[in-house]
Amino acid sequence: MSVSRETERLATYAGLLRKWNPAINLIAASTIDQIEARHIADSLHLVEIAKNAQGSWVDLGSGGGLPGIVVAIMRPDLELSMVESDQRKGAFLRNAIRELALPHAKVLCKRIEALDRLDAANLSARALAPLPQLMAYVERHLSPSGTAWLMKGRNWQAEVSQAQSDWKFDLKTHQSATDPDAAILEITGLRHA
Ligand SMILES: C[S@@+](CC[C@H](N)C(=O)[O-])C[C@H]1O[C@@H](n2cnc3c(N)ncnc32)[C@H](O)[C@@H]1O
Image (cartoon, rainbow, N blue to C red):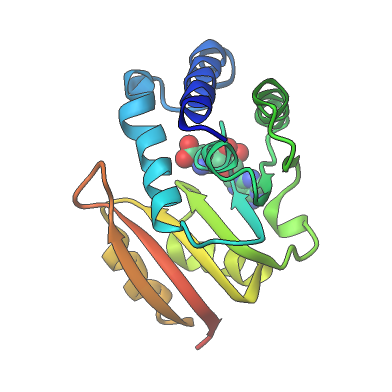
């Protein structure tokens, strides 16, 4: 796919978020002016960090599709599943997949804890849950040889310390492109402590 086609799809997606946010509350209303500079930029940074990803990708708690829809636009070669339990957000995501013509993306409109194990090669989550809880979700749905890409806010170091009480894992951190105090955590080898 040409770069211009990706850019066009990202702009269409930003338009869908702006159109539907007042009705469905996909992102915080106070950040509506930061769709490109923050929400989409964060997701594009993840795509860049994870450029060697192959195979399946599961985005947990996708909400309005961040980072899931952006990953699907930039990496149409991946089999991408977005898990989102809210029916209205799920409907928004299905509509976005259709309008953006993303044939390898789908929505699983169920609770993360209720889904059969997905055995994903890659797993992402942004603004979903504190790390100790997130680790249980990762352990359920990530392949033992897979990589989790967790987009965490300013409290990430304390969350890592808390998670280390119950879990062992290999961690590589990437400073956020949009907030120097936030980070993308690249996690492999997750197992109970
Ligand atoms: C704060 S939003 C973040 C959405 C998006 N990742 C973003 O960064 O804008 C968290 C989303 O996760 C969904 N969610 C929370 N717990 C869930 C669960 N146990 N199973 C499935 N979805 C869940 C919520 O419905 C919500 O849309």
